[in-house]
Image (tube, rainbow, N blue to C red; front, side, top):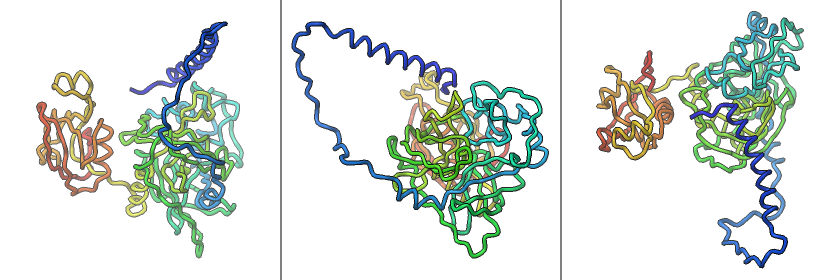
Length: 421
């Protein structure tokens, strides 16, 4: 269940208060004339702690720096007029209109809008304050984001909400050189976009190396490079705080949560692992106050890489479908079906003409694995199906009438309507 911003804020206050009170209570419990206390003997360490000074990231940052770019977007005239006059519907809660529905209710967008009145606190808990017409001059007629080069020919990955419906995109390299860029394609469902740098004949760009985000662990060191508030080549470091976060952005949510300081303008920038490989695309933050509070979200690299490859090859993203509508397995449903664990994806509807029906899947089946990978919820299944090409056959582990069984299902093409899986 998603936790609202207010709930998180209250929890933080309560925890802070409890910690302070606990400290006082512990001190008060120490008797004035205490009897001897038995020594506490620590057990063996679970791992050998690192010794010596922490390794510097300087060499690695220097190596990846040329691959990170700043993106300046000039909106079309109609959209810019809405921006300049503070259209609240367009920017609901301080978020750009290109974000998937629902995200603005829980997160703060990283993408800074240079047209906003700086004093209006667009990232506060409430919707932006209406300040009346605030037209801007040409120097403010744009917005900044980040991106990174993935091919020596000048292919750049960023967020979809950074480029939006832009008519002009300017890509600035770390050395200050600027080039025009064209948008090759966008994928709103994952909030990713791909740009190609134009007018750079005889120029070889420095691409990043992709890392394996599937092997990224909680506690791994990471660092972000981008242009927060337009400050190019800014580096911040932290760790992976959690994996598989669902933030309400879409059916394929699978975010890495990090505590590296990321702010407005970091959107679309890379998240590197300790070896300088991209493991994520910085996309959103949770921020009840408007600034960084150490809760950021990055699209995992395996998803970004797949989307980018399809956009470069086809100009769009095609996803596999099997023709089912899904429902979460609640404890009540699990109990009624005689299942011990409330996990998996319940098939609520089967498209009679879809590949699921042809493969023998039925309404009421609970999918527990897909292609050898576990399915804990509907989000897992939607993502696993979408990643496969049409025509691929995979084993699907299901529970039917309380009995475990396996079927082979062939992935179909995209379908319209409410059937999403």
